[in-house]
Image 1 (cartoon, one colour):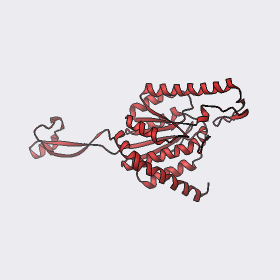
Image 2: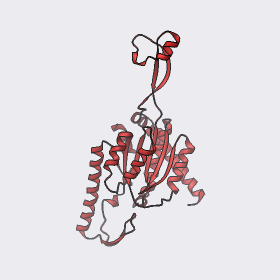
Image 3: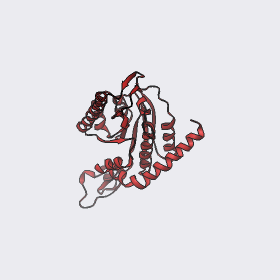
Image 4: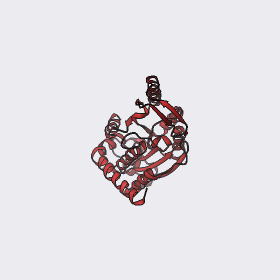
Amino acid sequence: METSDIIKKVRKIEIKTKGLSNHLFAGEYHSAFKGKGMSFCEVREYQYGDDIRNIDWNVTARFDKPYVKVFEEERELTVIILVDVSGSADFGSQTMSKRDFITEIAATLSFSAIQNNDKIGVVFFSDVIEKFIPPKKGRQHILRIIRELLTFEPKSKGTDVSGALRYLVSVIKKRSTAFIISDFMCEDFSDALRIARHKHDLLALNVYDIRETEMPAVGLVNFVDAETGQTMLVDTSNNWVRQQFKQNAENRRQRNKEIFLHTGVDCADIETREDYVKPLIKLFKSR
């Protein structure tokens, strides 16, 4: 992709996603992801009814009268987006691939975060950690994230959600709000999810294409596994084959649903031919 084409695409995504974050997500995002902690603000003289546990004994001794510490809610959050850049993310049977779709979602979340004065960082992962962009604020930082999402070429094609979650826990020490955006086509990741869930406010966005759940009857087709490169000739006109394909997809969906349910992680299923706004707002409101 030429530099001029990248700039145009970044600008197009910025206009669309910034508008969504300004008009649709501002209130919902702020309500769903409030600051969770309390930070020290100031000291003042003790007043009747103040909690004696907040007395600042050093200041009290200095001025020979009781003073208390005043705290305020921490509004600023650190938001981390874990983005699946494995081979399967390049698949797409609709107007855009899963990767392009994920880019728009990540951009919308990023602009929503800076509207809330939050820091935003991104982890790109396949079956290895491909790249880490540390959390920062500002429009230029968001534009860099979008450029990376559009142009990044991963070294590997596999998917390891557990590895991405372990990296999150080891690198981000302060409690953060973390979105993991993936198709979750991988081995069981429940243990890593449970550990990450206890340290961070974790949400999952499952992005999928309709052709990964339903196979059309179009005769003999060469199927290629985007992550392993293996090929298989499939007779899609065979009803049993189509039913097995659909059942396998449903089994995977049900397994992931149970994982998210048992670990207490909120999840939204988002199909690439649908508008991602509604499931995101529904997810925010549910919190």
